[in-house]
Structure formats: structure tokens, C-alpha cells
Image (cartoon, rainbow, N blue to C red):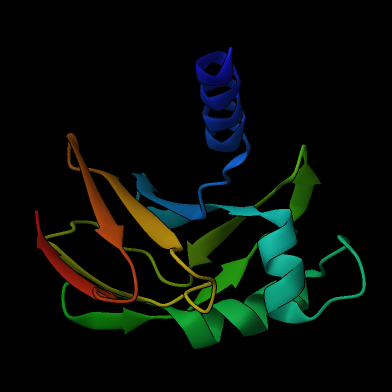
Length: 148
């Protein structure tokens, strides 16, 4: 009986553990490059010190400009953020690079979004040039350079 209780306790502890992860998927459609971003809503609310889950576009733009930079073919690019949408505990938005890019040969990403949260990781998903490549970023790895 004690073994069953111990196993039940361990199982419930594992199920309640929340993995701290945000996703950044980089894609290109025609000559437009964009990054689809998915965050835990609670994490963004905490990072922005926002009073509620209604995060504005300008709040996200300001936060991301400080914590997420992207270079394509050794050229830094600015971006504009779409209106953030919160659904089922996740906040989604899209960063659209402000200039057209025909061919992507390399990408450099600096990303320390939400890394103030213990054990938080950012997953970079590259979906470009008929390639699918994924990279883990965390406190020990806040910058990556990728040749395509």
C-alpha cells in the first residue's frame, strides 16, 4: 500500500510540473520573412508586469525589441508585431520583418526572452529553404548562427 501511495505521489508530481518553453518558428512566404511566436500567457504577463492577460501590441513590440534580435544574411532587421492573441493559456503573435528578402543564406538570432524564469528555454524552429531545423536556447545559449 505504501508503494502504491508513493507511486501515486510521484505520478501526480510529474504531471503537475510545467515545462517553461517558448517557441519561435521562422518561415518565409514569397519574399516575406516572419517569426511565429508562442508564449505561456502567465510568463509574458509576469515579464511585462502587466495587470492582465490583455497584452497590447505595443507592449509586445517593446519587450521583443529588447529581447529578440534577428539578422538575415549578416544584416540586422527590425520587425513589426501582429496583435497578440491569448487562447488556452498561450499567447501567440507574429513578427514580420520590415524588408523583403529573396534568398536566405544565413540567420543569426539573439534571444533572451523570458530567461529570468528558472529553467526556461526558447525553441527556435527554422522552416526555410525546404529545411526543418530546431535549436534550443537558454541562459547558457542566447545567440545562434545558422547557415542554410
